[in-house]
Image 1 (cartoon, helix red, strand yellow):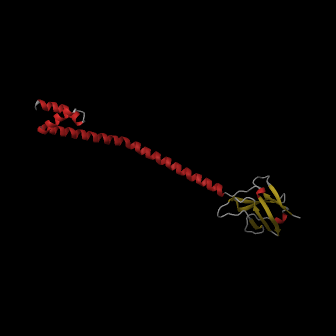
Image 2: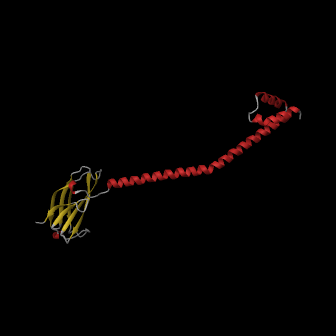
Image 3: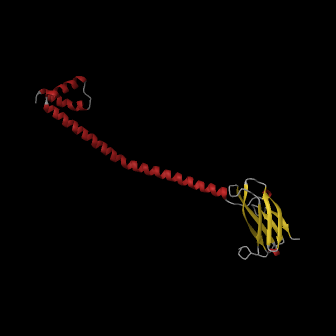
Length: 205
């Protein structure tokens, strides 16, 4: 190994990293073209650098992998939470819009009330076009000889598009759960949203 080989081999690390001057680069390349030994050393050094780079990349990827999994889990959890929240909000809004409730008595007007035997007929409507009739129920007090009629309404939709109702309720029907003797009732009230919101709609003569 001559003196030039020693100089070239000392400069090879900076040459591989691209840090040497143009003059040094030219000197090294001219020497390598004529020196097989230095050429092989350069090849081996480049192979070592390449292997080191690959190992560093692999180590970096392994280090990032747990964080990537954690990030993916966090994103999945947040997305799932938002989806669940959206579903719950949708259910709440649907129930709110479709829940049938009593309404104030001033939003209703009764056109006809008739008691014939055990059958009670009531015909009425609502003053609000946004309300649709959705059924009814009764409460009664035998001590007070009073019956309370509670119509239920919900916001208008394709199934309940009218506030008008016409019911014919047979209290003598044994298949009904609310069977009682209506002949003992002397008054019928329209029951509103609150316990004190009541309107007399029928009284026995």
